[in-house]
Amino acid sequence: MFRVSLRSWLVLAVPVVGVLVLTYSATTSEPRASADWQATEPLRDSPLPAGGTAQLSKCGVGEWPRPAPRGKGEQSKAPSLVFTSWGFYDPGSKMPGEPSFTVHAAIRTGDRPLVLDAPLAKGRVTLDLYGPHGEGVRASARGLTATVVESGYMSKPVEVPASGSFRVEPGKELLLDVELPAGAVCPGHDLADVIKCSPEHTNDVADCPVLTLTLADPAVRAYRAGTTGDSAAGSFSDRLVAVSMELETSQV
Image (cartoon, rainbow, N blue to C red):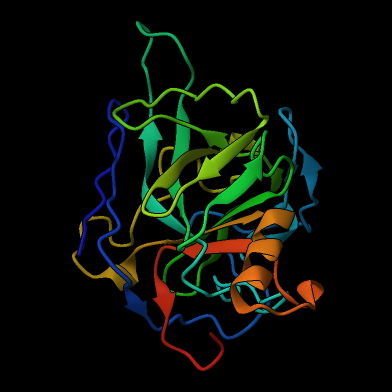
């Protein structure tokens, strides 16, 4: 398993090497305070400067990292959304830019192309981060937009094709970045330590946070319906879901 070590001067890359199995200890939806912070009054959701909403009302809430399906095919292998890495980056005082926490992911398709309009899933991306040992939600944002990027270190955004859409070919993948807004991080944490394990230096995956990324697009629903030949396209989910560590539970 991987071990996360936070350093303010380095992008933390956490490769996803396979499906990890974790028995999640959260069995209640009641808020649970972290060791460093306890709410004196209920937190409210609030708009984010760059768009979207910080779901601070979820802070400390223990819920299953994989959301309940909202249609058929949500856990199908094609198309799929997978994590490639994630991490915190601080450019320091001598470099341009602000500290950031970025999730890197990829969309993969099956034996048919998948065409997605640009901007990618505008306002239809959610990002949640759950602390270990029943801590509950550490960060939560909805209404985000993914950025399609090139491969490589510090990947740069890809220009929107003249067609106005991105085409994912069979055997290829569409790389994307999603920024975790600082305003979506719960009190008691910040962008630098939101992914920290507990204890920090551990080889046990159960000591580390779980990330959940979702992306919704009508093209995903149409693709799933076309794959099965089902004429009732509305019964299929339009959402792609990636969970960094899957659950060993009957609720999945």
